[in-house]
Picture (cartoon, rainbow, N blue to C red):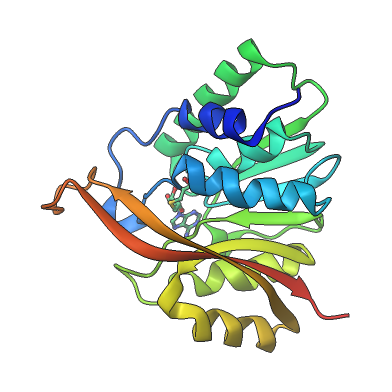
Length: 211
Ligand code: SAH
């Protein structure tokens, strides 16, 4: 598969999304343009093609599928919610019908991140964890787990939590190397939203183990 960045973004926009998103799990899908943008940078950085990837809090799988389409050799989708994981599997079926992704090993794991243990290490972690809108610092456990799994982590957070992300990274012997900033559209799929599309400032942090 060879994509232009634009075509890649269009493919990601065709993925199925959450059916009835759960507020308490902060099921907000990553916007396809946003995902395409930082995944493309990761690709250019040599961190996707032929690499092993884990997508934590995978939801419907946009980040993991992005990596798959860009040539990752293994993608693990880890998600607590069975319903979301079902849609993720459906997305996989659709991708298999359209693209040859036989070179990519795939695993779907239904698990709470706080109970996930793995001896396996990955080349890169991709994640858009709950921002802690409903539960403060719900993203901390995602970062701490990511640091146990890989030396390179791409993680989305509210931009205002920069100091928090920086601090948690430093405590684990990691450092933030890149910040990809976006004005993220939160789709009005949640019942308590009044405006159609609410936008928030989000940063994708590239975080790396200090050598
Ligand atoms: N990665 C997807 C979904 C982001 S929304 C995307 O980028 O579009 C955050 C996801 O984290 C949701 O799918 C939610 O169900 C999942 N999640 C929330 N708490 C979790 C936990 N404790 N363990 C694993 N997944 C969790």
